[in-house]
Image (cartoon, rainbow, N blue to C red; front, side):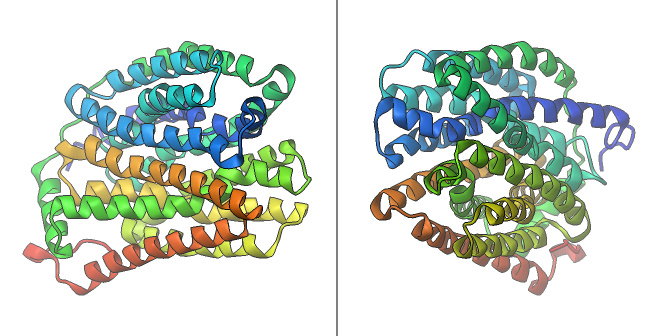
Amino acid sequence: MLKESVTDSTYAWRRLIAAVLLATIGGIGLWSIVVALPAIQADFGVARADASLPYTLTMLGFMVGGVAMGRLADRFGVVLPVVIGTLGLGVGYIATAFVADLWQFGVLYALFVGGLGSSAVFGPLVADTSFWFTRRRGIAVALCASGNYFAGAIWPPILQHFIAAYGWRATHVGIGLFCVVTMLPLALALRRPRPMQASEANVQATNGLAQLGLSPNALQCLLMLAGVACCVAMAMPQVHIVAYCADLGYGLARGAEMLSLMLGFGVVSRLISGAITDRVGAPVMLLLGSGLQAIALALFLQFDSLGALYILSAIFGLFQGGIVPSYAVMVRQFFPSAEAGLRVSLVLSATLAGMGLGGWLSGLIFDATLSYQLALVNGIAWNALNLTIAAWIVIRLRTRPAPAGRHLRA
């Protein structure tokens, strides 16, 4: 175990606060394109699927960048990737304000906003946080992973206001400057190197892999597939709720409010799920969250009135928020601590790649059908794949004996 004087300490909680603030500010890169999508589509005169493509490219850039940033965090500590990410956000947002074509916009978002920017304040921060907590690891990881949801709850109404008042280009310049000014000082709070973990945790990880009957890379691929599947499903409401409200005649502002509501309840969900994870284990939490998300998606098929969409936005956020943090806790359960930054970043980046794929697929289906109904059905199908993987892991852990007499929670 880690020394109690270091982990779960007052310093650990102060460090977590700084990490959450960094993730909240830097997480704007995951949501600004969602709010700006209608303005981008109108500015460049393109179809919905084309306007959704920069979001997809951003998520793919996030995935590649997350791997690189995770490696940097494992080798040099978390401060270096956070500083690189801060500068990437500043350069990326300011540069996009001066592009003339959609492809230029998409490339800049992919390289700087997603690839070098927001990726640095997601996976690496979540992995780093897991080293500073033992008894409360589930809730701490969930809180850190909530940073991008805090960003989603706070930023959309603010961005919609400034885009409506000053245009998306001026708003992007302001975002870039704000990120640099606020995030660089916060990075200093993370200077202390993470504590070392005793070999017992690595023995437990080896036993967990043996209980599943999988090699490390096989489990990594399985978790990444699960991450892609759950987030393709998650993307339809989250990426397209603003455009969906506009199509229904409710207006962009209502859609931005629903996105904020959805992600605000997602924060509540992540905190609750973190506490549940500390009691029942991450695999069970993944299974529960996946099942609840499927129910929420099915409800979107049935109701589309203004009041119903507000309620469903809250329900969706409350049901699905616990899925993503469970992957990070499972990585720490089944992999050596020395690989935490890379492994956590890989699986969390896969979830964002799923968001990107799901956002593009939903736009493509909308262009073909002029409706989001089949896009929701597509999401439910991907969710079924995630649910199957989660159920397999839980059943495997509950039916196979733990090696060396150890019992690992399912």
